[in-house]
Amino acid sequence: MEILKKGHHYHIFNRGIDSTIIFESEDNMTYFLKLMNIHLKSKVDILAYCLMNNHFHFIVEILVDKKKASQSFSNLFNAYSKAFNKQNSRTGTLFERPFKRILIKDEDYLKNLVLYIHKNPENHGVVSNFSDYVFSSYNSFLSENKNLIISKKKYVLNLFENLENFIHTHNKDNTQDLSGFENLTGLTKINVKAKFYQYIQDLQDTITSKLETVDGKAKFREDLWERPDTSTGLSTGGGGGRTRVIENGSVFEKGGVNISAVHGKLPETMQKHFNVKDADFFACGLSLVLHPKSPMVPTVHANWRYFEMYDEQGNIVDSWFGGGQDLTPYYLFEDDAKHFHQTCKTACDKYNPDFYPKYKARCD
Image (tube, rainbow, N blue to C red):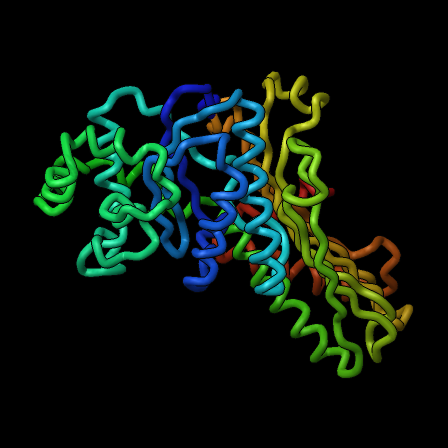
């Protein structure tokens, strides 16, 4: 992960953690721009930007030391995530972490990046002409009004020599000049983290819905929670979860089906174990435990989880999927255990007949 150094230019970009929409409306985008002005002003100069429904791009110059710069971006993303989650009755992480940043080493790269960012809405088919898109900085260069890019407006226009050439260069066919920039965001890549996080959200909905049908009386109660951000010391911003509990039903005395997605700095003890420094992590999972009212029915418990760890450059240095499911060991009828394990074997056999004996042995 690039360190944000004072006096240098960076391409800052990111997307929703599970490729989700991060801007549901124009009001959301307007609010995000307002927060940019609040949290980034005097910390960075903004040279260009573009907000799309599931990702964003900035070009910035860092004006302060790396700690203050990183904190200003964290404050921006946390403030917006908190408001967006409240508005949409959701919880947990909104943006992928860590946010992406690339050091801009020369003015040719910077010039092409300005073009790429401004033409992003057209390249994604959102508008037929990029100049019609409201939530990019392109039209700010054509206006005399004060705006987010005002402090660096002259510098950017000088890259293109003048305003006339700035407009001309944007409007000419420069697809070849921009080749390669699309891959910077990885927006077309569906990674394991995004797939699994979406999977456990859907799975929780499926399980709780079917258990309510089985019980016929009780309903799940939901609690949304957020985790502190250990890297900033803020009370939110480190992810969160969705807890669902059912109790005092016709079938279930009590049960819980819970999901979480958390991230932050890897504890020092774990950093030493994995021989990494200043590492970040992401972990998400689903856990459940069901206690039936009848002592003749066995209790079931399970958890499935996914973990990623990143080095100082933001590269994945380790990742794994794990978990397990079982009956509590005091079941009364052998047929219950046979049924449970046959169900597990049938699920495994659809993919590989070696999976069930292999993973059962590990669990045992």
